[in-house]
Image (tube, rainbow, N blue to C red; front, side, top):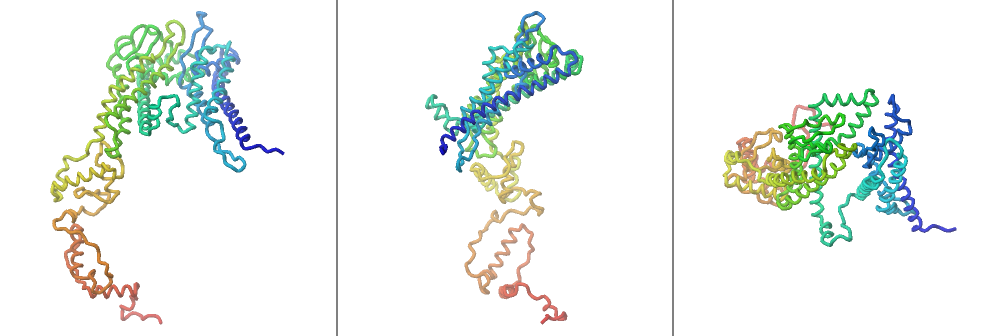
Length: 591
């Protein structure tokens, strides 16, 4: 008998893992195609007067699925007889295939521990490059089959667009999935890159700055998209009648109206990007001879009848409501500045850990660059041709929208970031509370010294509690004082902390106060020990009275040292005395 060596077993397992990754790519593409096909077939079945048979519906579903990947479609049946291109990609429809490809690559690249001959092998599974290639190849096999099947249908894919951008979109989603499975590492830089770049990427400080810039850019882009969606919603609300007429006029039966509603829902992200481009200033094209901006709508727009296009502004110069759209990029720039300053000068960190103004400016500029690049990329896929002639240009122009987002976020974001940094690094204090030390009987000099000590403690990071907020600068200090059990000599006591009235000044502030010395090492229970001496007891009583703030009564202790010593010895001898012996008339003890 021959026994396979561990190397042969591992090699065989890796081959099976590559095949499994290829199958995962095929399944991901098939799941997306099948889901969209089911939706198209439901609409076709519910239509009372379909234009074609089930074969045409299936080919149309394959073409729409390819359109979700960015492929350009061609519609051969037109009134003029000239095939019309369709390149406007519904972004909501594109999220499904991209997410499926990303998830397939992530699952294929995750390391799977297997038990080989009693030894747990953590290196089992395909390599990252192998998982990426296998998943991408499996997905593109289905793409090629769908493109071949859609030929001859009402919507077929342009072969030139299958390599770019379809293959690029699938490869990008798969690469993002492999990167996610690896833990989203930042680096190391490629070996062919310059040595200075490799050393810079290897530094932890650079990684943190790049992460902060990426988060700030994502926040600015999110605010920009949200503002664009808000502009579209407000415009549709103002022109609700026109939108309703367009919706009801496109289809008379419920199946057609449901199809139009689904198409409008899939184009909502596109409309949000159009609104963002409108707020940035370059606006969007409504054909080859018309452009809509907040300042005016120039030219004659070639508008098809569609509900979302009812939000397009009227022709002529823009009014004050149109100019209000400029608030969207301002809000995005402020969001970029705020998220950058949150990392540059955290509210719960000492001032020594804050970034310098130069670092803050560089990170904000890098975030502005990322916001501009993301805006250009998204607006490039948000528009496209929907026909020939005047409809060959439809949507925002990416090479104008991206630089506009960069300029807005850089010009407004950098000064805002510097001002926010100064505000967060300010020295919090109460100018109108300077009379507190005087009301408590403390000299002003001592109060100032205490404030300086508190500030030094905060700079060193010796504080706890909730972070200090701009609307409540005292919160950080009160929380720190409440948790540590210490408070300033002149700070007012919180009502929730204690129901006892506020005491007077602490004994340390009284003149002539001397702190306790170490206690003597003699046994405390000795009769003539120093602990029970008259002078010691009077000193203890005076100190307790002074520290209580007037709560203790003003009378001397009359208990002698001899009596105290006897009582203490009796307590030690009999911790629980017989109380019945104190009553002479009571019953005696039971023998």
